[in-house]
Image 1 (cartoon, one colour):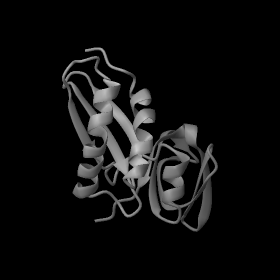
Image 2 (tube, rainbow, N blue to C red; image 1 turned 180 degrees about the vertical axis):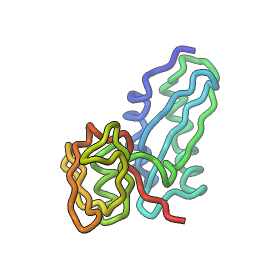
Image 3 (tube, helix red, strand yellow; image 1 turned 30 degrees about the horizontal axis):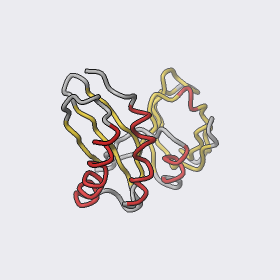
Image 4 (cartoon, one colour; image 1 turned 90 degrees about the vertical axis):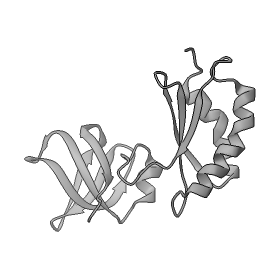
Length: 151
């Protein structure tokens, strides 16, 4: 199935997300399942009503864009989930002061995993407090940074 790039679809739909009070985090094609998943976030979180509101708002414009050049596909709308990795400066900014997990590709100061409180992100360095010290780790060394989910 031939499709328009996910980034193009996302750029087209971003203004619609803002209109309904959401942020379009990403658009993801699953060509095997012939589906497009739109991941949205919002202040205070995403509920079923917001997903449905966004889904209805993009349905007509997507028909006009025709991202699959006439081929049928399934449209899904979802929240990012609690354990979604931080990908943008906005993700980091939204979670300042919260507990995070930092997974590394290779050991940094002897460890590949840290937990701490996010204190900053400048686009290149993740800054967090752990064990009474502030750590600064280059983002390129991070395999995954996400919220720490405590049960």
